[in-house]
Image (cartoon, rainbow, N blue to C red):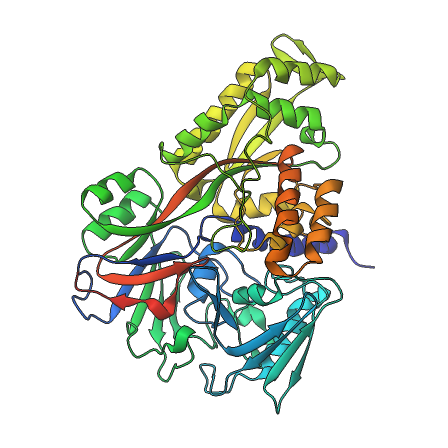
Length: 536
């Protein structure tokens, strides 16, 4: 008989694996911006090395099991995709030279001459094998529902160089999803963990050195010629070093000194970089959002409690603190540009800042205030607010402000700082009440796994959300191809906000500052094919 300890270890592992998808969530995912550039640095004009700072170690780089935002950004240097997305949201050929699609199928034609690092050809059979591997429930891939449709089955036609993907459930953005599918040769599927610190991939760079917590070195591949819009590796820097710099101020100092070329800076250091005329391009993204754990026995399982907790908060003030006054009220729940659907699904749908209404909501639900604390059945209303420290100290200050506002109202509230990895484990493990955890995706149907369906370890519905209106509207939207379902997707998003299942707090411009380089960014970070050294 299997031991209980062994079963629990297996469950925890499954939770961690599935939970990696949530960090597609976090700030590594931004929309497309135009080229940014600056002064000469590390290596001089025409130099062959570019140094990119990241705030935290990516952990495993295994392309089929990790969707941590930093890992996604780094893997884009080594792994190509079937399609790419332009700044206007249009589809651009990648490894697939053409495609056709319906809501339940897509056929991709794989361009000839694509190879992996070891020289082996990347074939239609390889792509089909990867789809089937990720779609197999026993592999518990965090990409299922993000880059690969649930119920997907793929078949390859070797002679025609085609891969046909079919689903029994509608996948209205089946082609757009493939931009998050990092392509690898079939033999690597047998041991995906072997790629945690190495690569055997189809993209313009190969990983040659991995020093966790310090740096990762990528070297340009010879012969790469299948990039977006026909780009090749000829003009790419010969080497890209990804350097772990945990402190944003330190990253800004290194950028100013010319010791690094690119840094994603969200906090107060933006002011001095702007004053020094360091160039950047930005894109708007959801920066703050509250998620509620609605599992049985948790305080936020009750709508009245969620409404009261939100009514107590001054969301505009929290957003201002979290962004240093640089944010703005959000209009969406995390579909970052370029996305096919837009519209304001937040304004007017949240409880207003009103402590009297908050008290009335709790009183109506059977809570009483005694000794300055709200209680029910002899138990105080107590919540913990978890947040990831890698979003910067200003977010920590905003969380502390929320805790103060709740405490003054009579809630026993505490802040729980977490590392970027441990906040994911916390959400998946289920022992949390409220989390500051912005979720960012590019397609509206990618959010359904977070707000509909099973909680961990069987799914990614971390808050155990059960919203019938969202479920109904999302199902109707899924039956319509692409942007035809946008009105329904917007209504579904609004249903989550109205039911206080999620609370978007603030959006802000996410800025990549750069010196000595030019590039474009997309939902994962730098677009490798656009990276160039610049004299100024």
